[in-house]
Length: 258
Image (cartoon, rainbow, N blue to C red; front, side, top):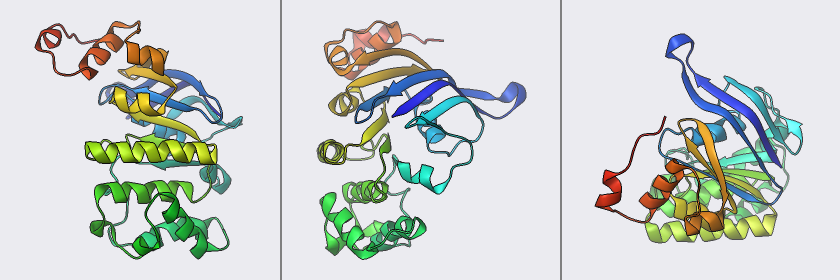
C-alpha cells in the first residue's frame, strides 16, 4: 500500500540546508500498521508530511497503491490518504463548529448525504450527534482528537498517517484513543503509518517498526523484538533502555550518535 524509496527531504538551500530525511526506504502492506520511532528532530514527522503533500522539496519516490506521488496532488490522491496531527487543538479551526469541520471535506469532494455522514462519523468515534455544533474550546483534548480522527476518516481513505496522535493527551485518554484506532483499522481495513517517540504506544498499534536517528532509518524490527529488547543498533538499544523508565546508571552511559 505504501512504498517509500530513497526519500530525501531538505529544508533551506546551500550550506545552510538541513537534511531532515536521508535515503529513507520502507514498505507497508495493505491493512498493516507500521511505526516510526525516534527522538525529537529525527525526521519521522517530516516523512509523514512528505507523504501528505505538505513538503515540496524532496527527492526519491513515494507510492500509494502503486501510484507515484508528485509534488502536486489531485483530489483523488488527497482522498486516498489522510492525516491525524499531533495537537488536536491546533489542528481544528477555533471558530468553526464540529459540524463545519466535518462537512467541509465532504462538500469539497462532492459526497452526498452530508448530514448523515457527519452523524455517522461522530458515532463511529464514540461521540454522537450532540457534539455537532460545539466549538473546539468546548471539548476536552480526547474529544478534540476524536473529531480529528473522524475528519480523517470521513472521506473513506485507504491510508491514515498518524503523527503522535496521543502525545498531547493524558495517559488514560491515550489508551482510549489507541483502542479506538485499533478498532477503526480493523473495521475499515485501513493501513496506518504512525510516528512517535514512545515505544509502548507504537508497540500497541504497530506490527513493524522503523527506528530513525538524524534523518536516517537505522533499524527495522517487529513489535515482538521491540518488546523483548532484541534490537541490534546501539542507538535502538539506548532508546529501548530509556523506554523502561528512569535509570541514573544507564543515563550516565548514554552517548550521542552521528
